[in-house]
Image (cartoon, chains in turn orange, red):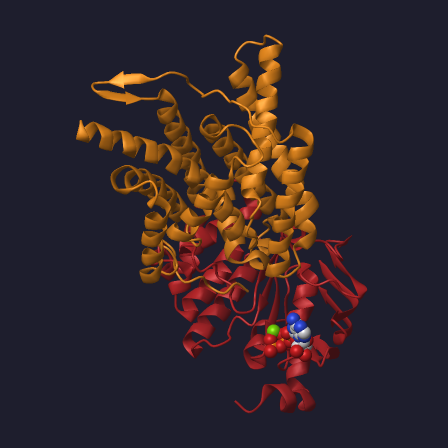
Length: 297
Length: 235
Ligand SMILES: Nc1ncnc2c1ncn2[C@@H]1O[C@H](COP(=O)(O)OP(=O)(O)OP(=O)(O)O)[C@@H](O)[C@H]1O
Ligand SMILES: [Mg+2]
């Protein structure tokens, strides 16, 4: 029995952890390529989830087949357009401004996106269905297929993204832009397009994280607070200077959160988990996989 | 092939170039010489679109490219080997070469182009997987030129390729520049090492505090007493 509970905690940790990882990867992708720390990632994900929820509700009401699938595809399309628009309208005009200025723009975005969501969708919270409902019994283990779906989906997205960044010409262009934008342009790389692409990718990953966490949190304007905070901590823990760091960081936080909460104390869960994280950062100040950031020219 | 017409450029309110005009014909090696701060790099940056001139015009293949983006100009077949090499430090040597092929990505396979540049710089093949930032200065300069070659440029701009390198490597780099030129690439070479630059180029321009002060065929410049004194020193 003890082993079963342990495994269940690990699976639960991997489930939420892979969502932290997705969200964190989006934040780091944008940060690496354009030096912008997008503090509005969570709110943007919340907004995307509300749109997805609305599509889902209307598809069901209209009696369309596979309403969840329709909503999922709607989420991908909407978040891609959403991410592009935010970049185009709010971020691109600030390309020449200071780091602090860019940061403040994303703080402003939190207010704009959250306020719009409250005005459009209201402040109530709504039930959202799981991708795959019900539970499954494997031996003595009781698990939700949804958990495996989430883990699988996150892994596939990250594998595709990593393959692209590592191996394709566009991926090398992304890394070149991250290291030295001006020289990348001399090579013929349209760095404006690269930046727009990172915002689109990050917003899609945020939307998926939002949709996957929604059954647990309900859909509401405050739904992403926890995932957003933890994804940032995951990015810091793993290291903002690597792409794999935030993924590992997200998984570690997800698993630790579950284990400490179950075996030690739910009251002290947050304190203990972040205590350990601070300890790690004392010994690895740039994160587990990070290196001292090189000054960009 | 490349025509710079009456360019004036500024950094804020400070004027860096005043009415500079250059002309480079297909197949030539042309040098642009001058002391520190003369405006050589600024001239190249105006050509590549990194700086917008306040006045004047840049023409490439009879087309006005003034104010175009650097990536658009790169797409037209003009490649810059920038001052200070500007290797991507966290990309491996092959990845640096791969990104050099970016403008050609729809034309063919970047890997098919590698043997050609490895033949010019065999040392790069030995260091293929090493990250760019860990190469020595000379190796980085070779990589910068090789990366430029990957773009199959019609015209290549080189900004002080000899800077900080041992004489033997400088010689190798200059021989390579001649070789690249003989294979059909037009060259605009910026140098402080005037002696060497004049040896391999047909014509030269000399800049002094943002203005062109001399220009002409190299033999003629090399014989001019004033120029000898000011730029060729006594080596
Ligand atoms: N980013 C900048 N901001 C302000 N002034 C600049 C900037 N870059 C260059 N300058 C000034 O413009 C003038 C021309 O500089 P430029 O870099 O073109 O010279 P250069 O001939 O390439 O010199 P060097 O041989 O030292 O590379 C110099 O007076 C320099 O101080
Ligand atoms: Mg210079």
